[in-house]
Image (cartoon, rainbow, N blue to C red; front, top):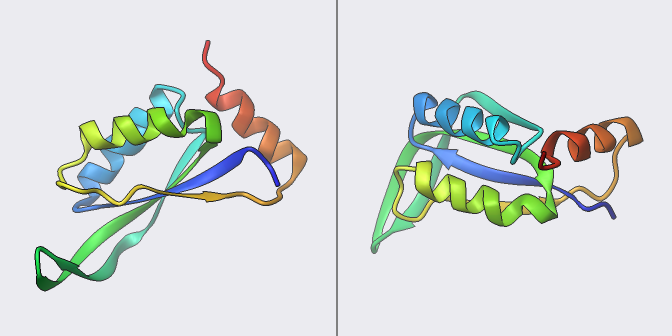
Length: 108
């Protein structure tokens, strides 16, 4: 197990997704943020109603130590009342890539 994580965040638009991605990488909170496809179709229950929406999915590569700062930044930048912010552990990976993540999110 590594100390690196992938954080999943869905956004209501590509514009919002890009704004969040640029902010996280710019602040050294994430090494890389990948946007999956043009949109993903999400079905969910919100305030008692069944809803559907087209969203952009972000895969945010960072470290466990930076998660709180990532979560706080996403909350401030996101338009949703309760944005999806889910961290998944990276169990293993190439040493070069994991080292790159560590160097990229290291505060200066």
